[in-house]
Amino acid sequence: MNHNGNVESYPTWIEVDVSAIENNIKYMLDLTQQPIMLVVKANGYGMGISEVSKLALQGGVTWLGVARYVEARELRLAGITAPILVLGMVTACEVEEAIRDHVSLTLYSREMAEMVSERARQMGAKAAVHLKVDTGLGRLGVFAEDALDLAQYALKLGGIEIEGIYSHLAMAVYGDQPLTHLQIKRFNYALDALAGAGIHPRWVHLANSAAAVHHPDARYNLSRLGSNIFGMLPRVVDPYPPELRRVLTWKARLASCRVLPAGWGIGYGQTYITSSDELIGVIPVGYGDGFRRIPGNEVLIDGQRVPVVGNVCMDQSMLKLPRPYPMGTEVVIIGVQGSQSIFIDDLMKRWNTSEEDIVATLSARVPRVYVRN
Image (cartoon, rainbow, N blue to C red; front, top):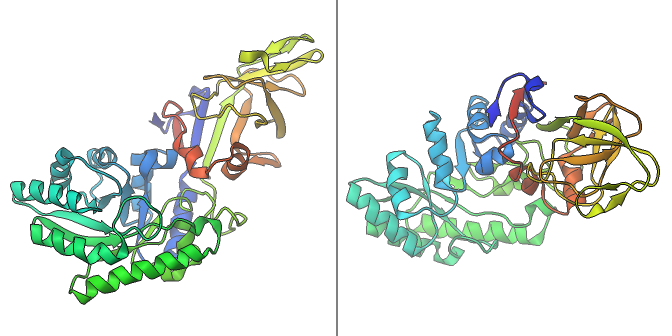
């Protein structure tokens, strides 16, 4: 659900700060002095794939990156004509759609080359591909020493245009790691091998959000960004950079506030029992929305941190409140209220996961509202 309507209509909603996205794009364009591919997979990092893609393109982004073709199809159906790269697998049927929709594909094996070539030649067309090199992440791609062989094989098959080449860094987000430098070295080996054979892809990209900031030698001529444009930490080992702005806020309204007597159990499993008369509030937010059932959760109400008590339910959570509040009082799950804040990186530590995992699993049933702060 993606809306620009009145937030008074919703019991819980996510606010996406358009001006923050614009600020972060401008900062990265100024820093890198090169085009940006914004990765908008997983519903635009949970912020609405079509909406944030349009905003980003207006803000200066050149390319869009998606994980699956169904995401590229959604963007084309939304009227977006910008270049799109599918970073993951496609099926044989999707190859034909991609060619018709002018969507670029990732080439990562001989088998993939054969499938793409066959479909493209049947259509009397060419498929634009970006050759994927596995420099150390261990996912899709060929080793650097095999990149030239795959490129030549694909071109010999016909129906394929190698418009790009890329790899993905495994450790850049964790600080200055030896593997990052080794991956850059391996990627350069592949580039040199292709160049020696007269193959010069137009787009060369390796830098992710962390490397684009901290490893200028990984930028080449296209930065492939996600986290820092969407207001998350470029590197988990650093404090939040002052040049970037946070994008996502998650709010809800208090559904109930009442006194429960001593010895009253709260929630499934009765993991919390009131020790005296306690004010217990309920918010319409649960694990079905992406709020994890993990001990130690807190939210903000009236500028104060309050604990979540009992097990988080699928659609609701219970709070221990310091005083009575009326139904409809605003509660912040992610964001700022008064002098207090709970950011995605705070939840990352509490939930022992990544920021990307958190935003990617925010349920589509929570309305997204686009604001300018």
